[in-house]
Image (cartoon, rainbow, N blue to C red; front, top):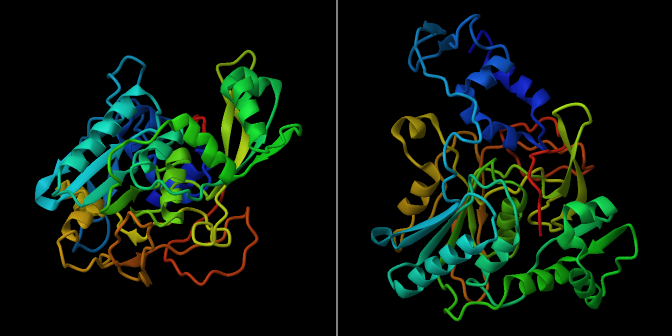
Length: 405
């Protein structure tokens, strides 16, 4: 494209787009490759025109061939381009006994709570539904409380969350007053949290109690007693990444898709500042979130890896096939073993999900096609796992989204 190979373009993205690891970078910019402003910034457009030259390799043909095609380029988005679609929705497929809950942003508000209650009421009333799919593939985060309220329909028992180290400042109180509210401070102190230091520790046990207070009383509906799947991708980030991580850590369900775009331990609660005399904005993180667990954060793992790896391939795109969801539906037939797709060079291990009393899990095989290289942020021992994709440089992520708790 524009005289550059995919590897050349990816190297340019690595130098330009803030990211923690390459899974985020591989997934997020894909829709941007047809945007005029994006291609112009990287010098890929032809001089004097909004067009780009492509050289394609065809299946079954040797070498590269010039192909003259005209693709309408998308304009840069503006605040008035299109109305923002709903971030939460669901559908029930009776023929496959499956209900799909699609969450594209972790927005804890009245709309989310209304759709969530409607979803679980529908599932509870439909005796045919024995499988729930939580789709987090386009979710870049927000408020983790959405996970707490969702999981109230899965379990009433205590479960393991994550630890937070939070830095305090006057500016933090200005930008995130909820963190400095006297009622919040008093509640944290009642849990034995020492907030006298500039940086205080909020352990997962205390965080669980705190979030349960925000989430409110659980529903009177019966707990879901079927199988839970979670769809993830490199775009799954921040609170959505934690949502998937908590489900994996507590064996509430099975993750299907590709690795998330965050490291298990990452920085969040960003403050926003303007650079004087410019239109530039920069962000400073004030907290560190730590998923300290051998299964989720295995010796410096650079992402939360799915239990079943199902990437989107070229044929899936050409046919408009949802590879991850179709994999679940195809393997959700009663008395049919769940198996991983055939991925060349993949390393497979057996994985059996352990669940709470209210959850029944199916046996599955885990198939990986990624080769892990330890992040620079961790000095870890050699992993026993073997992947076939090499993760490269690690950079701080500035996605412009606050990770709120």
